[in-house]
Structures are given as C-alpha cells and as structure tokens.
Image (cartoon, rainbow, N blue to C red; front, side, top):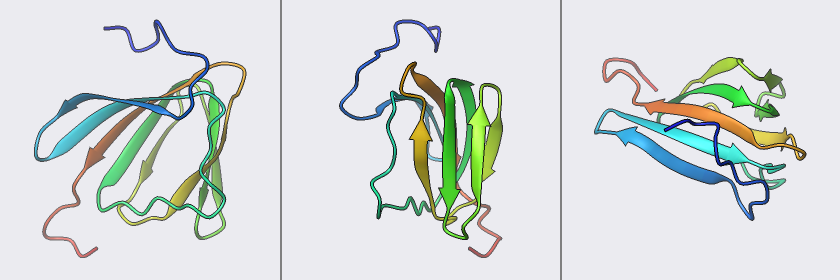
Length: 110
C-alpha cells in the first residue's frame, strides 16, 4: 500500500484509516482536505501522539497559545493530555498525516 496514492480530494470529514494496532500502539493515516477543528473543540487524548506530515501543510494550535505550522516531512510529538486542535490544512490538495498513538509509560505521572 502506498500512503500517497488514490487520495480523495473532497471529503465531508477527515478520512482516518487504521494501518496497524495492538494494545500498546495504533498507527493511522489521516487525510484532510481543508479540514480544521470546530472553534471550541480541543483534542485531549490519554495517549501520546507522534505525527509526520507526508503531504500538504497544516497548523496545530495548543491550549497554551502556541502553534506549530507543519510542512511535508515535519514531525511533532504531542504529549498525552496536551490540548490541541487543527487550525487549518491545505484546501487545494490532500494533507496526509501519519499518526502513531502510544500510551505513556505506566511509571510516569500524567
């Protein structure tokens, strides 16, 4: 499977495909076509999330007021419970994310 072929261009919502998972990790391909989070929505996940932008561009906003603009090849680790949202993704081509979700170490405090 090539993660960048046969990409849809008009989606009513982000397309999330689980590529692999077990009890410790989940790997997803996410395709966005101009999608963003609702104005009052924040992700607050119990898992760490590592993302790699494979195509397109995006901007993430964090609850502390900071933001991160991602371009093709950029990667970012979002710690568990770091509230964040998608501000925008490129509308003129699919934005393709590779996301790896994994639990924090059981020895660490969350």
